[in-house]
Image (tube, rainbow, N blue to C red; front, side):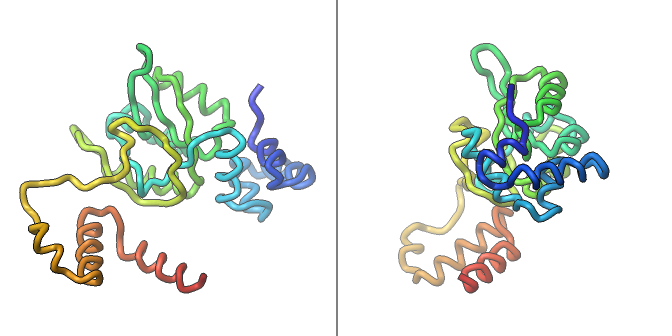
Amino acid sequence: MKKRLGEVLIDAGMINETQLSTALQSQKAWGGKMGSTLVRMGFVREEDILRALSSQMLLPAVDFNKVKVSPRALKVLPQRIAEKYTVIPVALREDQGHKQLVLVMSDPTNLEALSEIEFQTGCRIRPAVATDSAITRAIDFYYSKTSGDDKEALSSPSMVGLAEVDESEPMELVSEHHGGHGPDPAGLESLGTGQLLKLLIRVLVRKNIINKADIANEFRRRKST
């Protein structure tokens, strides 16, 4: 039988039995998910939960800044189910004659979620993990951006570290789509490092791969270290 999230965190040394018992009582009284309850009570951080799930369950941790999300996968799972369980599908593929859905989850120990999503989609689920807040932002971003006959994998909003989720097309690292226009490579070679960095940042911002807030946050983080 699969372990619950609390047991995984205890095994990882992130929380103790008393903290889990307290969180369970709070969850029983007020509802909500165990991970969110533990974070709200200050017993553990989202990043700690992610690290424990990834290491204890050998699941890849997903960085939405580095992953393409397939619109085909999004269409398989209704937004209401994604929001209900804090999950987001990122790739859909065939595996030995069966459809397989790569599903990023904040709690892959949630058997109710896995069962309902398998039933809803008719797909085998391959879990990956990200923080609750990162998935929530990704749900808001992708489901609002995806409509109609979108064919192209989308680039993204968020955080955490990628650990080889998949090598197939929908899960490639975010990459630029090369067109027939652009600077002459010989011209690029004549630019100084500072000019080249500024040019690169402008291109990334224009393609919505990063934004100015991301740059400012990273600058502040580096100054504080």
